[in-house]
Amino acid sequence: MLRADNVTYVHRAARAPVAGSRRGAGLSGSADFRPLPGVQQVSVSIDRGGSVALLGPNGSGKTTLLRLLAGLIKPQSGRVTLDGLDVAAIGRRELARRLAVVPQETHLAFDFTVLEVALMGRHPHLGAFELEGPRDLAIAREALDATGTAHLGDRVFATLSGGEKQRVVIASALAQQAGVLLLDEPTASLDLGYQLEIGALVSRLNLERGLTVVVATHDLNFAASLCRALVLIRDGHVQAAGPTEDTLTADRIRALYGVTAEVHFHQAAGHLTVVPLGKATHA
Amino acid sequence: MPDVRRRLVLWTLAFGTLAFLAVIGAPLVGTTRIDFARVFDRSVRFADNVDAQIFFIARLPRALAAALVGATLAAAGVVLQALLRNPLATPFTLGVSAGAALGAMLAISLRLHLSLWGVSAITGASFVGSLVAVAIVYALARARHQGFSTNVLLLAGVTLNSFFSALILFVQYLADPSEALRTMRWLMGDLDVAGYAPILAALPLAAIAGAAFVWLPRSLNLLSLDADAAATRGVNVVRVQQVAFFSASVATGAAVSLGGPIGFIGIIVPHLVRLMVGADHRVVLPASALVGAAFLVVCDVLARTVMAPQELPVGIITALVGGPFFLWLLVRQK
Image (cartoon, rainbow over all chains, first blue to last red; front, top):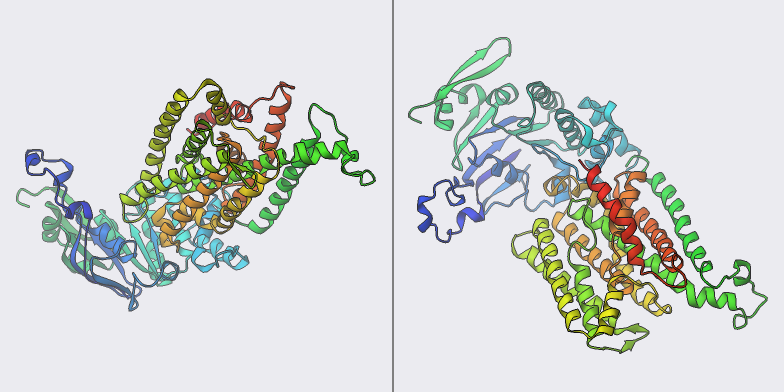
């Protein structure tokens, strides 16, 4: 179980008093007036094998929460635990064997091949000077297989399409053999076809392999198709959390984004769907 | 990474042979012709064997110095490119060489003629200068962030480079013409080390850096993803960045104080090697060190012979080869 208990993380730039901000009060839209990034007193709990989406407008704090859950930043108060262990104290290597992260986009600085990228997921399982053995190779190939990218093995990662890259990065995360997969807007830079493909892949990993999946996303339909529970975040606070069918309502969407929307259960799709109608006059 | 063990052995053997042949072959070339068989003829006493004396006393130290400088600069280039996630970074990007050059300039202009265990004051001063530059750049990179900002590192290095260059020009401006000429000559790179002592002095530093270079490569692979991706795969990112920065800086400082700021090796060699062996730093790093050694030895032979009996500074040769190569890379990189 992955839990955040009363975690607070406010970014330094936002916390520090901004010099001259009083004089600059007329300059709306300057950096001083960004919505407060970070999260305050947030608690979430994600069961093993669960699938949870973190939803909220830009700057709401969902990426901060995801980074806290991933142990990439340490909460200023409160704590994050994975199976009862404090994520901040667990050690990077040990954590990487339990929890993997897929970012929105991945750019490699050098021309690694697809198989090499998948093998990078074996890092936390190898000793300091150890080279990958046949077992690591088998695990990496199996991960590529599971994401439908085995045929790309010898291709240079940088030459792949966005959707292929994202599947290879997921394969690399799978090679870590972690029980928890955190995804930060995994489809934000992908076209519709790839969005569906990644959604189906993550859904399969959740249902068939029992991976715990946490997704921060802007795509409400993606979230509804993939996740059984939602956490709605605004201004660094949890507005609502619960099973998708109870939580994804027109009222909540209006409160969260200031947008009027219709929410239906779509028979063919098999999940709730959201049709945004326009900006609400009174958010 | 697949078959990384086999590829590592294969390429290390191939490039190791190349470097060895270059080091052994280079001393045979020169204005005075010497015969390889005579050099290793044990029936003649060393004191009477002119060929052996030319080989071991006059020319081999220079070939070894070239090999050591070439290897450390190429390896430092690989490490810094991975650290900065920028294939166009060089060992001189972070201001280390400018610091070393300033140290050497000061030693020459202040006429420090001391020497310690065969190491001249110029060599010592340039190494101290490189350390000062490293310390400044590192302090700046630490100050801005809780962790370690490679962006600040890059900007601080580039800024320090031009600042030190201005100081170098200032020192040169004040120096008298003969010293100005010596400083100019030093800046062009010179591997005429006159004996084994400077090489032996640089060796421990190169060895310290080398030990780090054995530990780093897999983490450098992961840093090519980005810092967060590396961290979530179990890399202690800040520690790796620190080790990479300091080891590459020490290697560069040692190389520059031994041979002067010889340009382009740290970028040409890693690129050529990557084209041949792929991106995996566990192969690229040792292969680059060996190719760097061979490359600089050959460049130095050219420097000695192209306009013989006049010697060209080896830095001119590497720049003449490296400049167009760098531009080709820029154009090729979309």
